Length: 403
Image 1 (cartoon, rainbow, N blue to C red):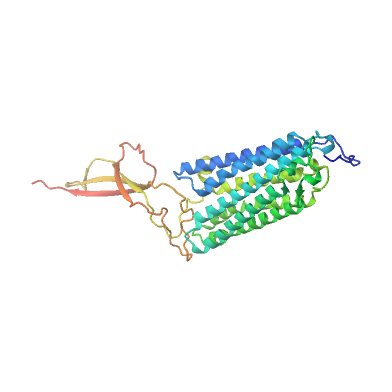
Image 2: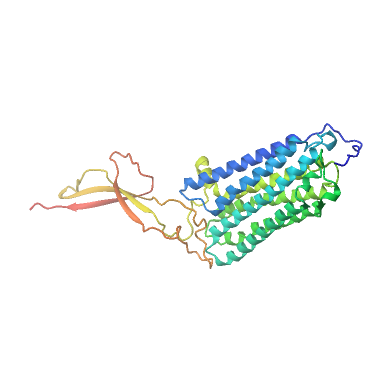
């Protein structure tokens, strides 16, 4: 390993940012795990099986964990976050290994999150033929980007191990024993800019379709707001690019200069997972916030029948009595309570959207069940155990005649 030059004047070798890297990495990853768990819980609460978008977001936690381990644990434990002159001899060696692991974890995490969002778009808007091509194009772009950056990461040095073994404190590779042909600075720019561009395109993709949903304006704004929360991920990507532009990656003090890049990289991946799960948390949030976050409680302009079971409960409140003091007639009052037992589903989360933008609603399920009506008795005395619903009161006049 090359001998380090003396530290520049004014450098405080006691400075340390190791705690900030570890806390940011671990806390944001734990939050990502929690929100993915809440997403799964929400699906279970609605009796909905996990779909491709759910499995992709679950898969994103694995490479994200690798990213956290590479930067927030291994590299930090060997000196990342301090000036290289105050680090142990293998600080640069550990930084290179940690960066290699973190890069692969970062790329796979971002790709899984983007594919998960696109799969959600497909499931939500697949009734519209016009949305299929943009989703296909963006999915292919993400695939090509992920493939290219992963291959560049693996083969940026020949042999691959030269990326970290050139910093080996005991047996460093000599310059004639390896070749590193990739400019790391340009490579960082090259993978950051496409990420920002695809983020913007994915944010813009659903907005034209949301405007055509047959929902009250308040719900439209709330739904658009959920998607626009993803704008925060784009902002994080831009901030990361800013630190890539500002960071001096050619300086020997790489364990200090790389701190901000490491922080914003791990933050971007974990926040992306967090934001991708927000549209699915309404059942859990509604349960604990008394329905404040419910976006589908109000009907559209033209209410359409849905599949399920309509139950009607009959309760004879009082005994027959004479009508107008004429013993030939008796009166009986009955109450009927009707309510639907259809299970809520988001097989088509935006069921009121059609290809021509009309106000037709589509079935909640691909093959809806035939509606049924069930009649049940209500216990006398007002102790009604059925869910609240529409109460219909009818008075029947019965006439009888002695024969």
